[in-house]
Length: 320
Image (cartoon, rainbow, N blue to C red; front, side):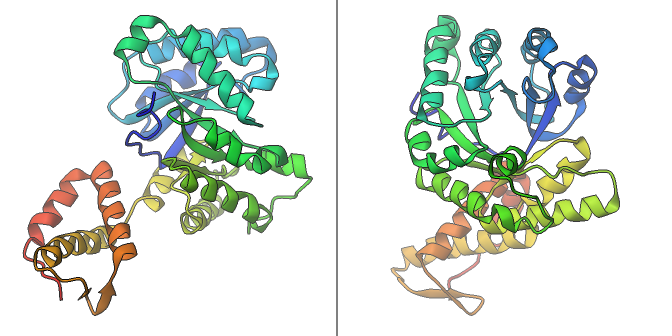
């Protein structure tokens, strides 16, 4: 499973879809999002858990629509006693690639998921399909203090961390405010732990309101704040949020153009044996080059044609 968590993943937006609603499951096939997460947890009442498992299993048995990059299943937490049945059901689908695991409290939760996958996934799928990956939701004081052990328990399995603000606020008796300053420590800790363990995905908190123009403005502010903090995606609870989230979590064309120019010039500088050079009057060093390469790589995932066009347009770019 070594290559699973490090595979190239673009998760600017992760949209939750209630697993007990056939209407919403059907509609999800027409939506555009990087990741559609079929939910077996919060949006499903206790009496409909078993029904939701079957509905979600049937949904992921269908081929992945072209407008969706990834489909995941949010199971119930390990501590709920429902996770085993959830995982065993959806593992039977040949199309399952990702599990979203809520309320991950410690390394033992990660070990549980890994063991169930190892013992319950049909052998023919384990032999022929890519390994399953896991996104862990961080929702409590305990999980925050155990981030290092949680990340260390998941090499090859864990591919991302997600901040669940509402449950975290409940656990710590916090009041959520528009500034989100009360979550500064938790969000920073999550991003830092993900980077330290080379996890490709960090998903920020949900914007809970989405109907008014003011709600959309707040969503933009939250996304921009998340980008500044180091998150590379955001959870969504309504389709109307996805386009905004994808836009803010994508590099602008102007930024991509700068990065393409820098990468082209850097290659020429290396061929010329130049250790120091400038671009647009600014000195270029290793961290700046690394940032440019990361921007180009992300842009290629989003719009490869754009990057190809910019490479051709600036093929004669020289180091200054």
